[in-house]
Image (cartoon, rainbow, N blue to C red; front, top):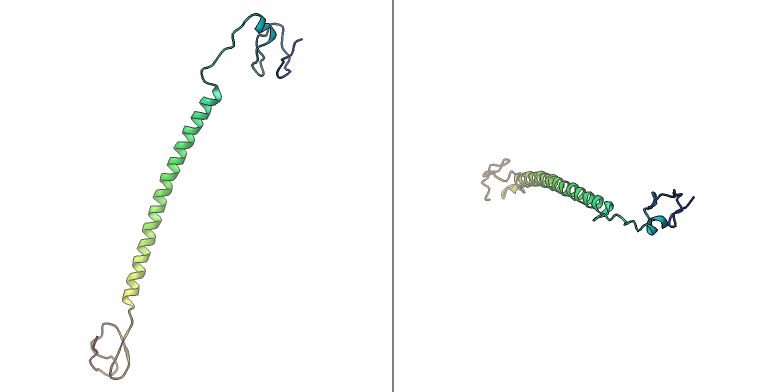
Length: 119
């Protein structure tokens, strides 16, 4: 029984090509059997499809990440704005020029002695 010159696969006397690796057999060469040629190997088409699918998945993932990051950035900005507002409300106190007592920032008169505070 003949074997393939390339991979050693067992062949029948009638085989023109190896069923494992596709090499033309000696009989196929003697009979001048043409090797079928696919314009594009299957792996190239499979690779192209895989690349298109991966590209689509990556683009979707990037868009999803952008949306998520934008939402997080907006939430962070909201918290920053709240913190600034709290800080503004907690400005340094005013001290009475007469008795030295600490008074709220918006005071006109001292809460301890009643003296007028110049702001």
